[in-house]
View 1: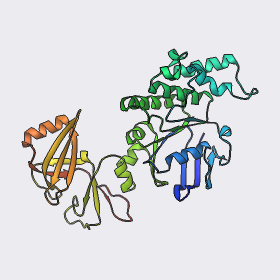
View 2 (view 1 turned 90 degrees about the horizontal axis):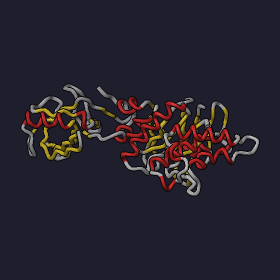
View 3 (view 1 turned 120 degrees about the vertical axis):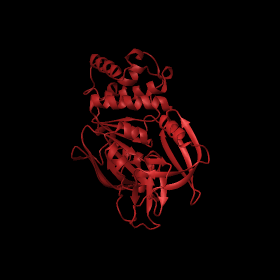
View 4 (view 1 turned 180 degrees about the vertical axis):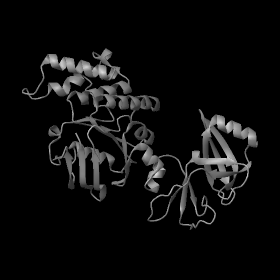
Amino acid sequence: MSIEIRNLNKRFGATVVCDNLNLDIPSGELVALLGPSGSGKTSLLRIIAGLERPDSGSVLFHGEDATHADVRERQVGFVFQHYALFAHMSIFENVAFGLRVRPRATRPSEAVIRTKVTELLKLVQLDWIADRFPHQLSGGQRQRIALARALAVEPKVLLLDEPFGALDAKVRKELRRWLRRLHDEVHVTSVFVTHDQDEAMEVADRVVVMNQGRIEQDGAPDEVYDHPASPFVLQFLGDVNLFHGRFGHTPGGVASDADVSYVRPHELEIVAEAHPDSLAVTLSQALTVGPQTRIEFKRLDDGSFVDVEMPRSDYITLRDQLGLQNGSRVHLKPRRITRFTAGANPNSP
């Protein structure tokens, strides 16, 4: 089921949450709506679901206008952040619920329900706990059951609102990989809301970056990360150092103080000698977390700080070669620079 969003507008009082949005989601695609709190991503998801009505614009499902269709008519499955499982029902009955409450004319037989629920529990790898109750499950297991329940009614579209937001980091990482594999099996058109950049980049076919009710950029994860359309996208998708003025411009190049150069921490090289496009710094501190080391440098020209990141093994080698210690003077040379000038697209030589 394809989804088309056309000229969609929605506001709550003076707050604009959808500002003339246009978006196409092809059938079978897994799309992440990514952005900070208040960017409009959840409002857009709720409008697609039929839980909110837009002020203007339209939502089309497979070319047919569904803007004013009732939630039940849209054939969507919805997975919330906090599971919303029925505490008094077994896991089996939770998954079967959507099938059992159908009108008698469309309700499957008991044998069909039992077969379908068993298949879904196997799909989410939890058929062995069918007789348990939600309070007996871990958070990750409850969320997988919530997904199975949403899939039981055979939705044309699956909508997920921060599905892993209530889980700890380790479980969240496991579940997002699991969701990707699950989607590759069922191929249902899926839209999920997240503010977690890693989650969006790892799971989605396409990332839609939202900010203040607008779509800043829409593209494949690598495209959005490597070729950001705006400073907001660049800074939201990971750490970045900002440099004003001439830093990083090639000899003979023209740069004003209004120009800003952006360099990610892993795109800065530590060198002993000065280069035309390098920056003189002193080492402030080095912090190692697992396999990565983050080094903080202080600029000699203005006293501001610059972050550099590299694999721990590379840093140890470099530290020994250059005799690095707190206070050591070195130079930072960018491997890649992204620049934005007012009214222009980014240029990344």
